[in-house]
Each structure stands twice: as C-alpha cells, then as structure tokens.
Amino acid sequence: MPRRCGPCSACCHVLAIPETGSAGWSDCQHQRKHGGCAIYTDRPAPCSSARCQWLLGVGANKDRPDRTGLVVWLVEDVADRPFVVVHEARPGAATLGRGPGLLARVLAQIGPMPAFLRLADGHLTLNAAARSWVAAG
Image (tube, rainbow, N blue to C red):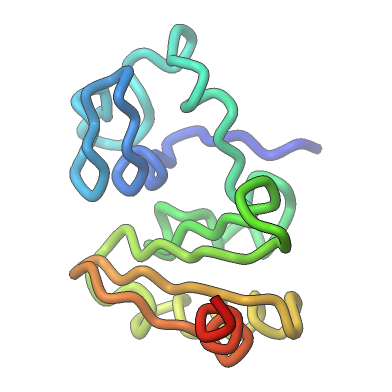
C-alpha cells in the first residue's frame, strides 16, 4: 500500500518553497498546528512533487519524518552522481530517539554514495564519500 504524508509536514519545515513564501528551516504558513497542510489539495508543484524516502518505502512506518525529525532525500537530478541529503527537521533528532538508528540504516543502505546531514542549527556533516566528492570539486 502506498504511503501518504497524512499528518506529517516535516518537509514543509525544511524546504524553501517560494510559491508559499516559505524560506525553509521555518514552518510554512500553511502547516496545520497538529500536522498536515491546509492547502494540500491545491499545493504548488514543488510541494506536490516532493517525495522523501519514507514516502518511497524506506524505513518502517514508525520512521515517518514527523516522528523521527529526519527527512531523507535521494537527489538524482542535480549533480553528475546521486547523493543523499538528510535534513534534521527537529533540533537533536539525529542523536535522539529513532534518529541514530534511522541514520545508520540509511548509510548502510546507500553504501559508498555521498551523504550530507544538515542539522537544524545549519551545520552540515558529511560521510566519507561526500567529503572526497566535495574535495574533488
């Protein structure tokens, strides 16, 4: 059965969506207080096309981004090779609760692929593959 966003709106916090006035790393004006989107049926294209890895079947149901505080993306169309970006939607999510286990499973699954972890405070952490990829220019 395909997964649905439901009450999850973690991506609405981390993504910059000019059409909604969201600058990213802050709650979108259309986020509902207890999760979900007030304009979900009429949301702009960048919102409707966003597909985190949880929606695509990665992780358990309890790994939904609003529960773990981590939004995992596979980026295939920006660079000459795919890479993973994990956004920490909630401060400390990468080190608390289900976060560390989810990160470990994602890194094990992607193997040598570059991975970037963007913490809620703006810091960026890289795995070894990402460090060598960045160093190579």
